[in-house]
Image (tube, rainbow, N blue to C red; front, side, top):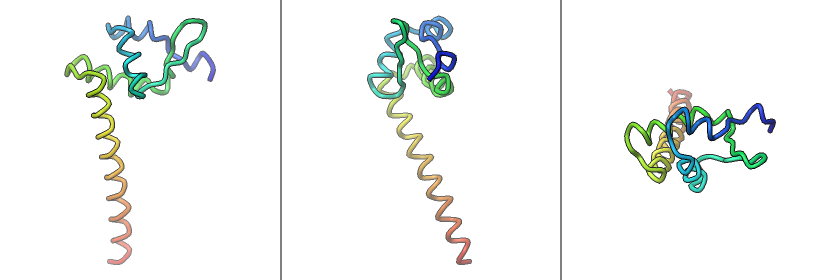
Amino acid sequence: MSNQNLILIEHLCTHFEVEQSFFKSLENIGLIQITAVNEAHFVPEENLTEIEKMLRLHQDLEVNPEGIDVIFNLLKKIEDLQRELIIAKNKLNIYE
């Protein structure tokens, strides 16, 4: 992973007005992966959309990191169930 695909956590903290400890909490839960390079901490740019969702949940709805984890797990289960439903409907359409 090259450095150009990484975003400095300090920049995110400044931009979104959040403490670095918030990102550490997200990492401890397993929601994000933090990469250390020369004592600076980064997150992959490809995760920025999800990180922004997490920050909105935290700031706008005052959801703590554990709550964010629950929400993201439930959203993933919903997506999985929707995918299974589409597959089942497609199989059913074959027999109609």
